[in-house]
Image (cartoon, rainbow, N blue to C red):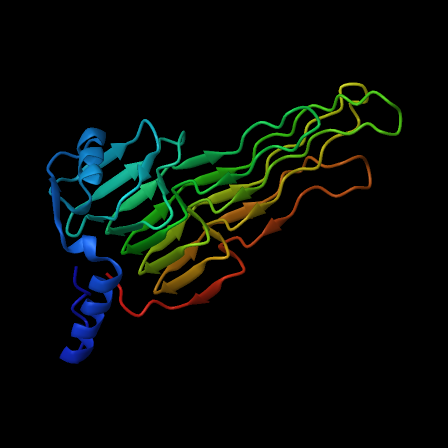
Length: 277
């Protein structure tokens, strides 16, 4: 893997290459050529690890989330390839200690929904519609379009004793395009558009239906991270949304919150990548 040919100083270019080779050595290994744009070919290429180069154009709609458990570089340079979740599933999950790189690919229609809350419990968080990351994600010239992270609905309230009646609140929606817990996210010249992180709805108490669980929060319409290193350069963000539901607690109590229509960075660090792919 070598950096883009934008360097004017040869020693600087060489340094960039050596840094990338040292951090991500498996990207230099030969992988697969993806000649047919379908799910089976994509999965086979990812399973082999290393660099996989697309030699096709088209849309690959996944039937299930792909787990990234070894270093992989998906290279769509010069092609027109979309990887879609069909508005039904998350696209990729990146394991700890693993590097996942993409170039010139569109990731769209990814959907992450939190679990339903048990009785009296909050719904689970929906995180990372396109990518859920616990390792290292490097994306260059990619497009993240129309992905969603939706918090799960709260559980029904079953408390019958007066003054103790509650109901489950909605789960949080976090990072519709990318959610990263620890790890690193490096993005260069990418487009993030029309992604939505939405809180889940609260449920009602079975005995007193007017008692309703608090709506979940939405954070990071495009990107949300927790304790992560985030490096962005030349990226654009448009029409991304982080929103809570309107379903709130009893009268006078607030619903959930919306934080960061584009970005929500919780801890970690933020800056610019030095060596784009």
